[in-house]
Structure formats: C-alpha cells, structure tokens
Image (cartoon, rainbow, N blue to C red; front, side, top):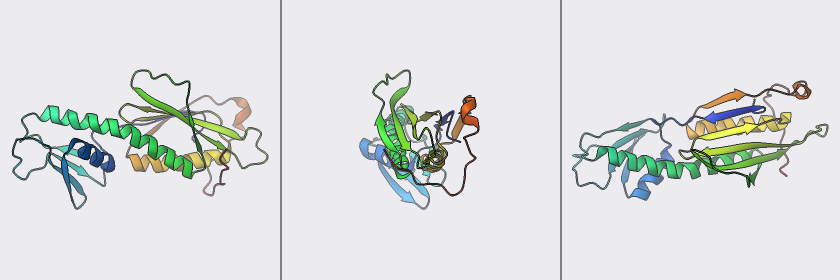
Length: 211
C-alpha cells in the first residue's frame, strides 16, 4: 500500500532513461543514433578518433548502459561530464513525470514552502487528493515527494482513504516502469484507529475529485 510508509525509487547508476540521455547529449552537443533497441552515442566532441565505435550504448528495453572507453583519452572526465548533465536533467524529468502521472490519477500539486534542502536533497512538494467516499471522515490526503540531486524519488505518506490509496498505487506502478527505478517501501507504524479502515487494494478503483 502507499499509506503509512516511506519509499524510495532507487536510482541505479548503471541505468539511464533514454529520453533523459537524449536531452543530456543534445545539451552537451554530443551525437547519438538509434540502432534497433539500442541508442548509441557516437560523437562526444573529442579529437580522438572513434573508428566507428560507440562511446556509450543504451539498451532501450532495460535502460542498461555500456561505456566504451577504449578509444577515449580523457574517458573518466567525459563519463563524469555526461553523468553530471544527466543528473541535472533527470531531476526535472523525474519531477515532471511524477506530477503528470499523479495528476492523471486525480491528484493536485502543492509546493512545500517549508522545505530546506539537506544533504543530497534537491526539491520537495506534495501531491494532494480528496476521496469520493461520502462516508470518509478524513477525505483529504497528501503524499510528500522529495527528489534528490541524482533524480532519486523519496516518498512519505500517512493515512490515505481507500480510493486515494488505489490511485496512488496506480501512479506509483507507472512511475516505476517509466523511470526504470525499483521502488523499495518501508512501513511506518499504523495508529490503531486506522487499522480497521484500511481495505486491501482492489482491481477496480474510484475516480478522485481534485481539490
């Protein structure tokens, strides 16, 4: 469930989202080509001849990255340059993808005005929703999202009405596939008054009213 838990979409350093990688290459002036299910970065603005080889290969279906540093003299610097640009763009990409999927599920965006970045934290905000269950005594719900400097998403939530929880789960599932990052959940203690109210996830869910 998405309620009374914190979770993290774990950022795997050996994977990259194809769309973000394209934007990073374009920003750096690097060139890439598509060959079947692979994205190949073939020109990284270096004087070193590549002899038709790729500098980086991305498997579109798995998001797995392979670096080819054999022909590059300053390989480490070039790889770090790409990773830094990727992370910079990935933060905004992750934020936009998250907001888009949750808005599709009936949530609305709310700024976290009290947020003060700590450590690797970059931005934080809330996605809010209202239950359609007329018998629900606490219809308003929020999920807090914090995005780290590398695009890792961290969530935190307390009580969510059953229909809100359904929609949150649907959005989380899509994001997990879209970002290519596995979501790891950590349960929080559930106050006794909510235990009887929380039903298991259903296949058919109720549309939400955004507030």
